[in-house]
Length: 199
Ligand code: SF4
Image 1 (cartoon, rainbow, N blue to C red):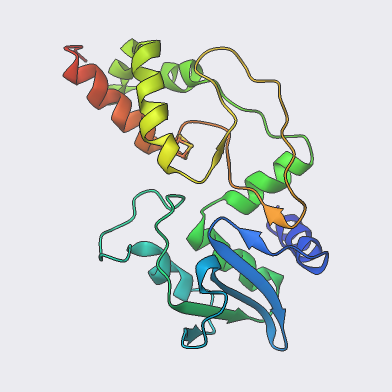
Image 2 (spheres, protein in one colour):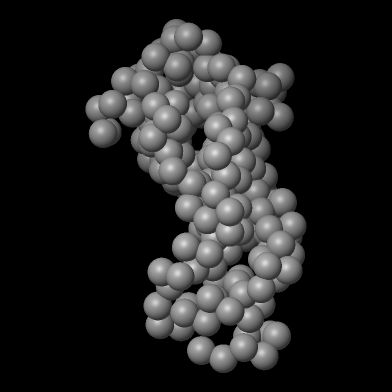
């Protein structure tokens, strides 16, 4: 799968791929350059030449706070990453937006199956089992709060499967959410507890 993703990403890059979330990608003499989309015109960016630098860049927001949701639109500015090939770009992207290149490839192949929230919650055990008591209204509030502050395109619904298969601009690699993340499940637990539900 790794090799397939690298090769699909290489293909996307040479066909003019230029944007992933808040990251702009461009072909440069030494390979591929990644920088924050809002830093397009800057010439004073700190240069990094190792994909592992992405881990540190992605870790904290501009105020120095940990970013638990890597797809929140809070990526720091002021850096550029120059990498030799698609495999290195893929490694960096896995730090910036974990698993998103693999999910994108599954989507392009028509293999990505969204999981409705009720099924995600039905699988929870231990302290998260209580999330099965989440009401539709509570779920909607979580989606309107947490998911609204996330760059991923949400493919799942609360109960009914969503058969729509959206398409995206070819130059933009979409960030896709096919199943509720751990943060949303944790928030679901908080909502149920706050409303008086028990484990
Ligand atoms: S559930 Fe998906 S869309 Fe919502 S915050 Fe988590 S990753 Fe983002």
